[in-house]
Image 1 (cartoon, protein in one colour):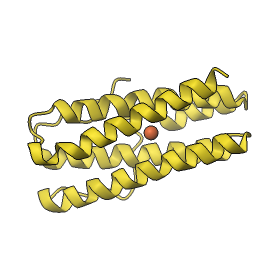
Image 2 (cartoon, rainbow, N blue to C red):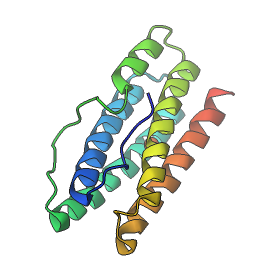
Image 3 (tube, rainbow, N blue to C red):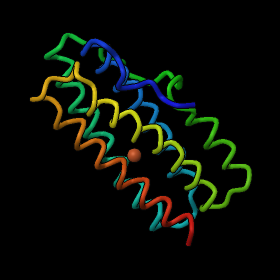
Image 4 (cartoon, rainbow, N blue to C red):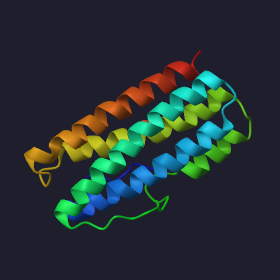
Length: 149
Ligand SMILES: [Fe+2]
């Protein structure tokens, strides 16, 4: 499923959708950390998870400025995280789990790219989305590399 996060035509709903996406992403990171066997992989994924907590902080501050709702959990609508990770769990293989997680990163990369290109985002707020995009690209690169080793 291609995510529509980042394509909203008003700032408040754009922020709310990003907050939902970040909650879903964090839930997927939790599931991944739980299922990986390699302790170095677990530590790296936990570090990436911290980036997502930072995104959530940034977005929550934005939400206050734009009067956006701040959902306290995800809705699993925009990202098929649970399903993908559950599938990966069938084999219990780290590489398969990381590949499933990498496909979630594809969605977050798309969402942050959308945010960067969306003219509804004022130029002074663009930095948050650019930083998010750089983080997501870095996460995916590492996952793809680790999954192919
Ligand atoms: Fe990520």
